[in-house]
Amino acid sequence: MPYVNIRIAGALTREQKAKIAAEITDTLERIALRPKSYT
Image 1: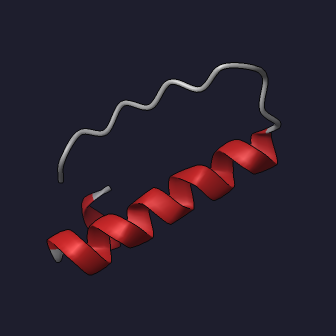
Image 2 (image 1 turned 90 degrees about the vertical axis):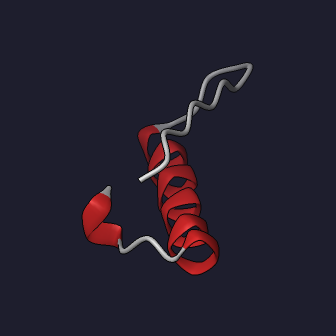
Image 3 (image 1 turned 120 degrees about the vertical axis):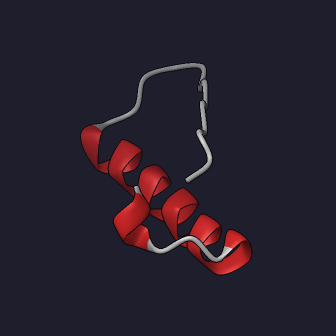
């Protein structure tokens, strides 16, 4: 699985962070053909 490092200015809630992580995971699965189990 590719390593992804994201920096965001300002505070985020845990829910927002979880949604961002889920979206990135879904994108890697769809585009890079890496199953979610690799994350």
